[in-house]
Length: 107
Image (cartoon, rainbow, N blue to C red; front, side, top):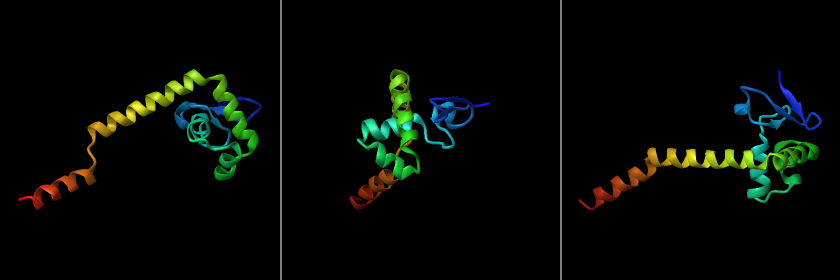
């Protein structure tokens, strides 16, 4: 059973979107909206239009974000750290090919 908050706009459902708070009826998380708005400078209107949301959905997500900012910012930081770790452990195949081509042209 989904827990519904902020006047039916935000849901938290175990097993959907990693259990993160999301816009009801969508897989768009509050974290997604926060990143688009706060870090990429997208307006609420732009987010709503691009993703087929209502302004109420976007503002509910932003309200939830500001009420839980530390927790969500920590989640964003953990995601960035994980991505950096994966990049370090998994070399780019394109970069490998370029290096190999560079070495073979010098032979």
